Length: 331
Image 1: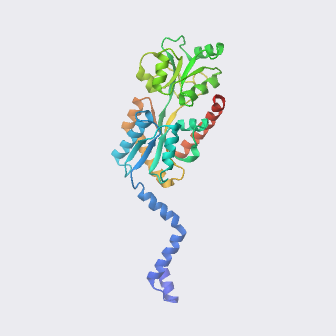
Image 2: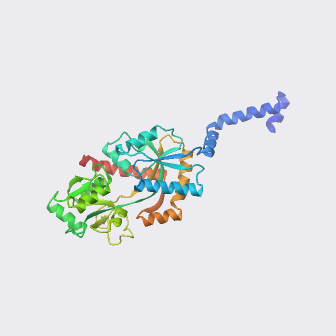
Image 3: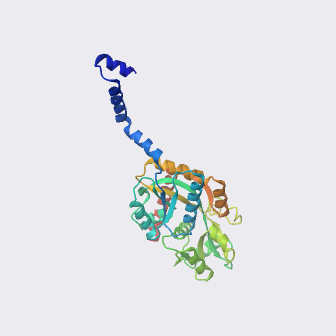
């Protein structure tokens, strides 16, 4: 009203013209903010593609589908999340698929710290800088095992044997995989060496261990519990003992500063608008706190928790530096 009276008194400009000019001036000052608000309100405008860098059926795939279904059921996003499996190339195939899509929040990746292992080993043309971290939705830690009839009942006994007879025991690992790195980190910390036999999956590790072609293998706690017989867990790599494995000590308890909590990590392309990431994070945080999801996690030796995007990325970068140190000794 002030502007209308002012301009009518001096230049006889119409009220409508003044309001249009004033609005244009304001929009000129805050145009980008207005556009962001509109983007946030409109996102998502189509189904969200969730790329999983593995074949169907593994933990990463199952968790992605459970959380996507829960978000759809509760209406925490206005569009569904559609899981697409793109395995191979140590994750490079999934990253390339992501790069072919627009960085607008409608294509994201559900991965874990094998991304960091691939980066540390130089196995792909990607790294954390290619992504914007949305957050962690829980995770799980593995156990290091021997056969049930092995002459070692504790990790200390096994370490003492390997120090006395270096490389006398065979460890089943997939080169560049999580079992490879976790075992190598422990070996560096405790001061021992093993020999490797190649095993590219949990099934391969189990077959080699039970068949007597390997002496040591790492498994997810859920895999170990599902096996039931034939294995003996010597150490758990979580920060605290797992309730379902109360007699298995952590590495830290035994004096080795080694932990591995492999999180369910949600990632967007680096150029994704912050507003879209915020919307996605809000839905994911609600999902990991849902009672049914919490129950599933606890029943499957997983820990349900939420870590926001920036904190998750900071944690990942610290882990990457540790992995790079180990990678330099095992390539």
